[in-house]
Length: 395
Ligand SMILES: Cc1ncc(COP(=O)(O)O)c(C=O)c1O
Image (cartoon, rainbow, N blue to C red; front, top):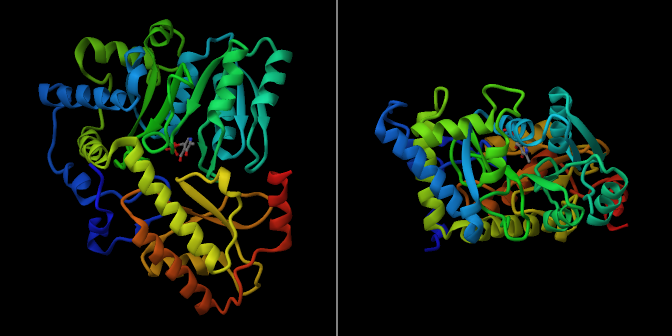
């Protein structure tokens, strides 16, 4: 096990690296696995679906017997909505812990569902903490579930999921986890975070192509979710019941995406599973952060909050820095980066996940340095407002 990362191939056909946390850069073998057609009713495809569900559950470790895996067509948000609509009772209430766009989207989803929720909005990146969850749950006895965003991909913060889940469990509430961008590379230990359900998607840390996501939920909770969903197509119980009975997806499955995903799961296993994948991404992040700091950039987050998924950097204060030019020049050099999502100061983000290794991250830093030179930016130091903003995290 363990991958010789030096042998990792660069994208074919001159495609740039996607330094974006999904869709991300996938291997040629993963894309190649899509070069044939499968009948959705056929035994071959049913076997592929069964294998995929079993292999995803195998990533959970010892607790896997209590859980089942239900794939859902669509992007990650479809799975979040399926999870909320299926596991939160119609008279339930969710404490949504938000510190970025995906927490806010979950709250919006609750609005659409017309079910009760309380939104704790910590702003762009401040982490929700266990003691505040304890205090809220003590005050609001109507809350039945707590929704935790594992890695809030909009800033890249790795939220303290175990601390938050512990506070929820201690107060007798159920835990739902959006582990979209973390599952497969950051451990989510079901013996410590006894979640009711969690979601992730094909085109994140397992390195498949986009097209479906999956809900991993306790079997007893799936059975109890019968008739609870607001939606025909996003009903986790109905999808599960059909898969259990017939081996089929209820509606047209993304056959090619499943084939690619199985290939991606093989590579994940060969790399050493969650630990191996997490180690490569962590190294990617460390090399990126060290290199970017070395040329004067500053990260939004202090080291303890940095995920191995995506890193937010402040834009330089130098008036010659223009993000659109920086973006285009990085793209010309073979790297697609991501605009930032902070509301207070300008930023950009660089993903660490996908088919790339530390050599690629060194090339990213070199490309960023060259681009600064081309733009005539003397220093990458951020404005004082950005540093002031960052102090809030330390406070
Ligand atoms: C934490 C998190 N939740 C939800 C989503 C939504 O997924 P999608 O954009 O695939 O609908 C994402 C997407 O990156 C995410 O990172």
